Length: 77
Image 1: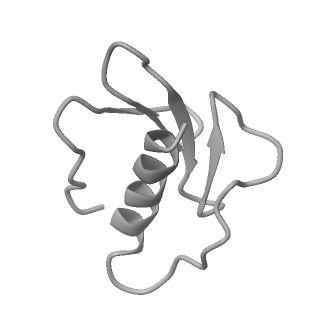
Image 2 (image 1 turned 90 degrees about the horizontal axis):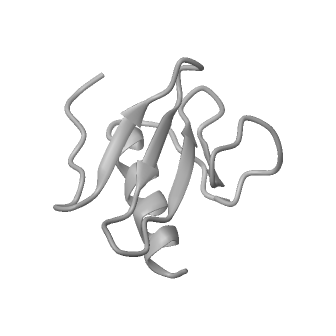
């Protein structure tokens, strides 16, 4: 997997499940789970349930687009 660009102040941690957990900057510190295999986003720490993203992710750069959508989602909370 190529290097993903995470905005300054944001944190992306790898989960044992193969997904990632994205944290927004302090002081709010919201989080979203990025399911790379399922190519979707869930609010909070979650391995089950409906994805909040509706886009189709494929082709070159899909991982970065998925990450960018997760950042946009958490920024809108």
